[in-house]
Image (cartoon, rainbow, N blue to C red):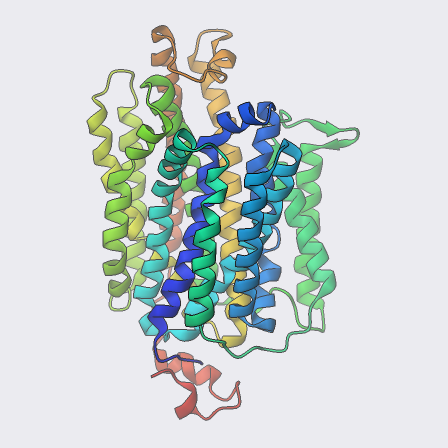
Length: 501
């Protein structure tokens, strides 16, 4: 196992780029109306600005994690950061919706190259019993980015124009590149033989599954074009992923996904739990922001400010939780976080009436931040604790892929549920009209719309409780000496030299 004299400056350099990626995942939603206006396009086309990014981000994660192992996580991170930054400039300069969608896809590819490397580097430069604070910072970055994206997007769109939500990435990307180049160590590479059939099967399977789920609502879960249907695509994706798993089990070469990782109980459970977290974080935002803007008449920036307590508590508490999980069994910390998050979402759901005092929503928002701080670090620490140096990239790729798939599932599921609840709670024919309103709803529609949004919030609350069940099943963390005993000699070093100090 490797160590560096000053791991924290390296981590801060990586976190800056990771923060930029996460902000970019949420910032575009605020700008969609202005992009439609500026590029003279329709809502179906502008949705692809986000869809192209998410698809290009999710599909390559398994491969880019392994590429980091083979060519060095620092090298792949810097290449990905360069692609992301240049694609951001391309996005801002785009003069048509087609060009913007293409640029966003390239931007997503850059993000996919960067994301697994941040987690892989943490795994390799911090000892297993010292990773808690590092993973705490990694988790706090995710929580704060959820707030900064919509607020920064609102300010930039209102003040400078939609192009600047992309232009702002350029100076940040340059600074992040310089910091990473100077501060992130060049870690030992591992000579992997690439499983090309595995790459093809996993990429095709993930693309079809993610595309089908993500675009299902748009096509009413029916025909996309000709003989191709949403469900046909989803089933084909599952079949390809099944073939991929079979191939990983029988191949005599080096598999893209080492299936033996899933024999590690905590790795499997942490991946299942982070899938529920990705689902919940994505699913809870849509009904909540619809409620704030269409029922309460808030602007995108004002509605994002309602999440300030969440971001503050998450950002302040995450480092302390990171230290705590090095001392206390992460099972108890994560379980508490999942339960508190479910309580927060159900509390928010109960408040979603047309005339609730708006300040009351700040209370469950604060509880959500406390809950979030208790989930990210314990899950990532538990997932990576038993991974060896050769497995860091593969493990990080798998973990980030499951989180991203959870987000796509959450987006598709909540869109379908919102449509169903609007049809049930709104006057006949009013649900279609409500979905196209850009300002505050007429007063006679607000009660039914509020009820539908409140009911929709129950789904992420139930799913996040499933994550709590996964956390409850975590095995007790293994002793550090036992972990290092497995990997001493793998790198050709004696035990005294290979253990981080």
